[in-house]
Length: 213
Image 1: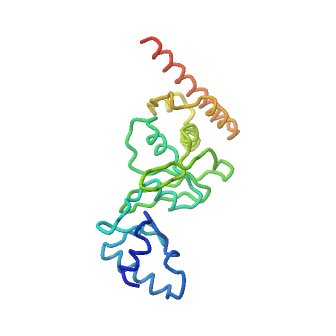
Image 2 (image 1 turned 180 degrees about the vertical axis):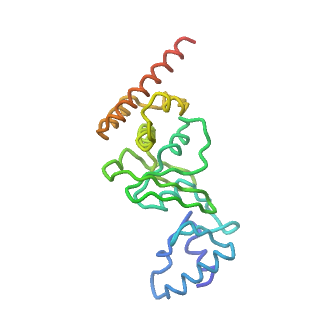
């Protein structure tokens, strides 16, 4: 396969898997050797084994970090600090895309960013949605309430008042307190019930402060 042919196949894909190139009468070993050669020539980025993206100037669609994250581990979704920052609920820039999955925890550092995958039990993989990211890209991202609960669940002492206040939550009108409490009940963890009450208190304080202005 020549690079021009590869480009024709994948030019509209933000990321692509080796399997996309193996249909029909092709030599898999030859394809893999070519992918290695093009990666070494800086025409491709290898994101993990079997997952690639075109490198500039060949890149027609710039891959969104959330799109990459979903493709790094199938069945995962973006959550915790990354989702909270996306919704404007925390002020900090988050340099690593944090995800939740039911497989083992792992981390990849790639030319297109760093990706951390946190493990939860499969029954807790819920309350996420497909978000439009532009350029025809979508990604599965936790709801604001679930992103906060995932972070608290995965953090030792995450239900403490000190920790929750240290998050410096903002734009609290974006949080649905009842949905937060319902999601905490779904987890069935006292830790998350306590945390939901702490967050509800912060929301009430924010409303009172706004009404007092």
